[in-house]
Length: 146
Image 1 (cartoon, rainbow, N blue to C red):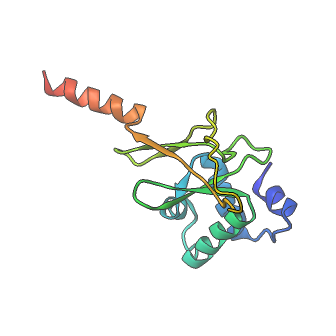
Image 2 (spheres, helix red, strand yellow):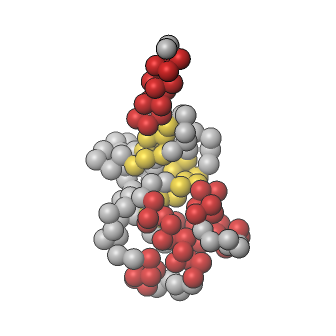
């Protein structure tokens, strides 16, 4: 499903800015920070429009968000007929490069809350060093021992 179809299905006006922002999230298929989304957009994109669009997409359930280790919200497209991020799963964050990945094969644990409480969200971030950074680290160590 493309960005226009997703916006239309939710009865959201498909402005060029909204479409391009959602297209970035659908293409990347991993949680992106505000800055990462902005860097992938065409020059001249209004910062306020980007911020408001990300919040709109979140409120409408088109994307989910997760806090990274630095306290930055990252946004990811939900699986709406597209093989992107469906939400309700943990994420892995690399301490070296900062990239965050969806762990789609794992569900978040069920947690019992006090009766009468309304849960508005949940997320879990597992952190460490990603495969690419480990390979680079190993090569660097190997090169230093020559």
